[in-house]
Length: 101
Image (cartoon, rainbow, N blue to C red; front, side, top):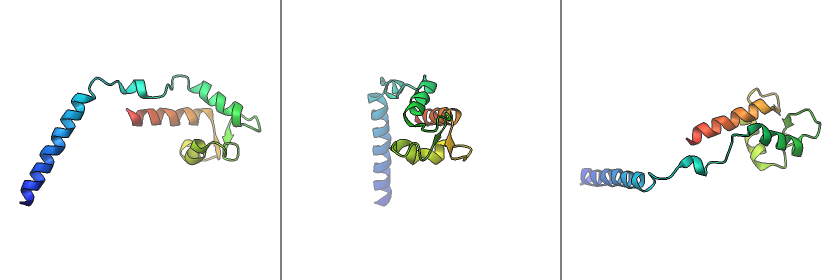
């Protein structure tokens, strides 16, 4: 009886996968993703909004009011120098985009 239940479950999962593939086949995932082609402009906006010491990098103290940057600061700060540079920010965005595709 257990093998029958497992077989039924397996068939149901495969069928659901096929149906969802058919239903979502026409959807273009890239249309629902945020546009990241102008990465420098988005970092420039962050610098304009948060860079208090005008060194063109962002420290944890400077981004404390931005929940997304605060939560992901360590992930974005690739070299662990306690500052987010434009290069680190752009690399983080590129990695996020790759993980979504």
